[in-house]
Length: 425
Ligand code: F0G
Image 1: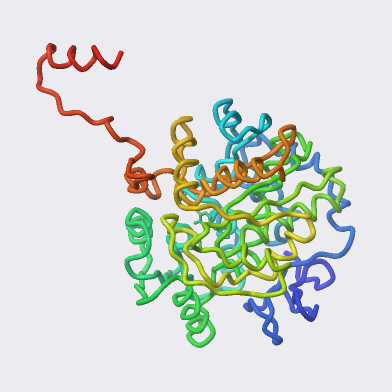
Image 2 (image 1 turned 120 degrees about the vertical axis):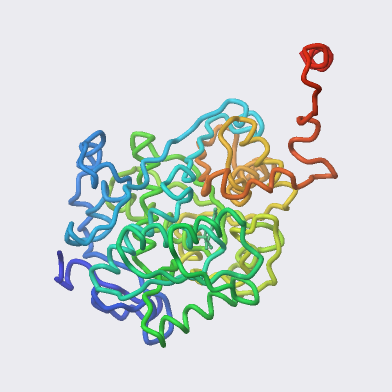
């Protein structure tokens, strides 16, 4: 474990003040977010071959797609690490999806294959391990459902009390049930996610709870490994674009930081551009991007993609830096567009939750606009599992749901089946 403040420290993204790693704080005194930083050149001295040599190793920490990259994640005693293990998700290529988006070299990194069904597990293993290191008595978060499920599962493993703040009636029932089943206390907040977020921040400050939302810099360190693992999947031959859904903006921040660090360390020779995609009715980041980031608007968010129904994202400044550094873009898609993309992903036999489909819907749109070129290599991040929000399959686009006409009652005799088969085969 490193207590050496010259190796890893928390640094304010605004005033650059430094704070020790083992202080349970998420904001600087000046009010800005903190970021975990390392001495310059530290990662350049880590040969990426070390990460490759851990692939296929049976040790739990090497099987984890997070701790496999531990030199760039967090210096911590093994005994404090709470790992499922997580990560090691697959990268898919499907010709029908390439054709649909008109991008030949299209890959999908399926983060829904994590233990609790979303990318949140990557950040949670690190932040929960840090909660162990600082001996936090109890952990908390606000959530649209995935963070809460992940927090509850990792808290159960760590033996910590967990409390989650969710917008009442606004999260998918399967995520709610999952969170309850793992044992967390659920506080249903009257209001939206942004209200729940404000409340949990206050509660953590005043009531001694340890905050595990993505304002916690250790969450970001874990989520960086989505990018590092996809680079490893591609034999460190960096793609031109990485596209992902954007809500509270923790993931945009994390993937941007990971790409920057990988590029500066010399693990990749080209810097991919980020494409952060919002739902058009929950689009404060897009609105800001359109104005050259000169404003920070808040919106009243409403979208079928409940995971990203967020109007005032907390990691705004970090995500802005990620877009600027990678010469990235921010785009938006309508609910109809993201549902159509989800249908394509589902019909390819992969499946994802609605928010995840923003990435593919956004890539199709950016391709049509000529921002992404046909020859570009693109990786879409699918952030959540299909089973997180199965009801969305029945949501209509232009009056028709995705499985219209697929369920037919039949009398229990062969003649009736044969009749249906006549028209169908
Ligand atoms: N996709 C899914 C499936 C999510 O659950 C989230 C965020 C995002 C995308 C957006 O990521 O917030 O880092 O920009 N879910 C959070 C939660 C808010 O509470 O589960 P982000």
